[in-house]
Length: 206
Image (cartoon, rainbow, N blue to C red):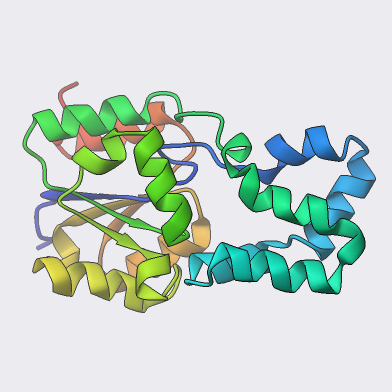
């Protein structure tokens, strides 16, 4: 018999708040092909992940600018204008988060996020400071999803059983890794589908 789901664990980027480098670089590099080439060969997802794993932004920008001096201003913008990549909340999910909290559901988060930028995001979106009992931030742990060890940090630090946790993430890789730990997981696309799953679990009222 499965354990009852008692606890909800959120991802943050593209579940609670939007994040997409395109929002910034559409303005800085209007040509689609040129912009795609820059984001695929200079400020790549792999480069950004190193910051999510704890590398300081100043170091990251300096190192990459040294390799691409002609792109130094565009590289610096990734950090200096980071908030342009984060236009706001994801429609509907902060409201779901608030309802769960009002219902007394224990709430946690596991997020791939630079420590520096997460502090800025918490200042900008106060619910990121007040909603969760604990937030496991990849930049602090130097572990990133889908590495199973970052989920183990959540369980061990908070005395949680994976089988009682409902995990929400927009990445299929991260969802599969979470299911591998024993969590029930929801691949996030929109708040309506998430709400339905939470209602079905009895965590939200219909």
